[in-house]
Structures are given as C-alpha cells and as structure tokens.
Amino acid sequence: MSLKNQCKSAFICVQLQLLGNIILKISPNIQCDTTDFWRADAISNEICRNLQNKNKCYTLKKMTKIVSIPDSYRYKFANIPAKLFPYFDSLLKKPSGNSQFHLAMNHHPEKTFEVLDRQFSACSKIVSLSPDDLLKKLDFQSKDLSPERIESLLGELRTIHFLDNNGFTNITPIRANSTKSPDFSAEKNGDNFLIEVVTSIYFAPRNFHNTIVKWAISRLQNDDKLSQMNTGSAIYKNLFVCILNSLGAVALNKRSDYLIMLKEIWEKVGSIQNLYIAIVTGKTTIDEGLDDCVYPSFDRV
Image (cartoon, rainbow, N blue to C red):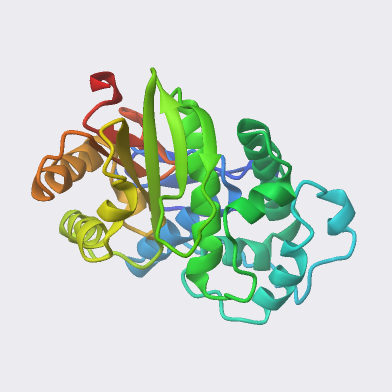
C-alpha cells in the first residue's frame, strides 16, 4: 500500500502495522498513531480524500472486498467469540455506512481480525472473563446489523483499555436488564465509579467543537444517561465516556481541543461534582500526545 503525496506541509504518520506505514503530509505537528487498525485505515483514507479534493494527493490503492469470512478465521483467531463470525458474515451483506470496522473488514479482513482477536484477548484478561462471557456481559445484540451496533461494541472494548490505562481496577461490565443501567463499574484510588459509554460514528462538519458539545449534552440529558449512572448513592462517582469515531474532524483535532470541549460540556450540564467526562479517540499528536482525556482531571479523585 502506498501513497503519492504532493503536499508541502509537515508530516503525519498513520501506522498500519504489518501493512507498513503510510506517510501523509498535512497541517503541522499532527501525528496519527493508533493501535486499532480499522481506525488508522479510516483516518488515513479520510485525510487522503480531503487532500484529493484539493488536488493535493492521490488516493490510496483500493483492495478487493471479501464477501464472506474465511472458515479458517474461526480457528486462527480463537479469542474472537464464535457468535460474532456469523454476525460478521451477515454484516458483509450490508452497506458499511460510517462504520470504520466494517470498511476495514471489507478491504483488509485478516489484519482487522488479527487486531480484534488481540483486543478480545487483552480485555478478557483485564476483566477476568472469557471472550464469550465478556461478549454476553456487553449485551451484544447479534440481530442488530446497524453500523452503530458493531461500533458500540468496539467502543466498549476501547473503554476497558481506557479504564485500565488510567489506573482503574475491578472493571466489571454490567449486563443490561429491565431497568436502564450503566455499562461498567470500576474502582480508582478507593473510589467506586459507574461508567456509561456512548459512541459517535457519523460525519462531523467543520464546526466540530459545537457539534460534539451539543451531541454529548444531548446524550447526557435527553437520552437520560445521567439517570442511568445515578444510583442515588453518594458512594459512587460517575464517568461518561465519549468514543469519537467521527471521520475527518477527529484527524484534525488534538488533546487541547478536546479538553476545551469537555470543560464546556461539564459546565453546561451543571458542573456536577461527582461527574467526570472523557473523550477517547485513540489518536496521538506529536506535540500533545494521546488525545484521550478527561475533565475534571482524575487527580481530583
């Protein structure tokens, strides 16, 4: 896979692991580096599309789509729950929509499943559950073939990594029941947390700041996510995790931009003292490091 690029600004690198590095040139001081293959693939293609519209670069080479999951994958990638393979076969018959995973699965299936296999393996160890039991706890609905469903599942796996990387312990998925409940419980520095996860996958317009602020506030207030985290007990703190998979804009913002958004969201929902709000993108920038951040800081805990 290669890219011919005629831009004259600073380099960014999107690592596609075994497929090698795609070197892109775009605005200064931005570097895309992600552990999720499908995220890197989607961001790199989106950046190229934007640059191509300005006659600044050629597009990436397209690879042939697959029409079904090879039988060998069920044995080769044994950490992926068996229930997901027929789901992926059905998913391949649907349009990919805005699902980054679906696009990567179409064009780079083996690499995509290799990364998903590692994610299930790592998350299972973190929560001390088998991959099959973890999938059950995450309340995955195999009949739901919408782009949101698979991205929500991946967002929950990403949240497990985010919590683990930020020093949380006893991370436990909370299986949905007849009443609305948060997605996870966990502990940090002796404090108990209830965690709710939401995922954004749709195209974000240029005014990305206002779009994300309005979306997060709407999910917290109109979708009643605050109530889902609120048990009425003072012993729990609440963490609202926003997984941003919105193409285009994610590639062109960085940690400081997200911290400004988070502060505004937190203040507009009432500066609730036991509420923490996080944005997780999986992207890093050269000057600011990993995008993933939280407001207020966990140091306040």
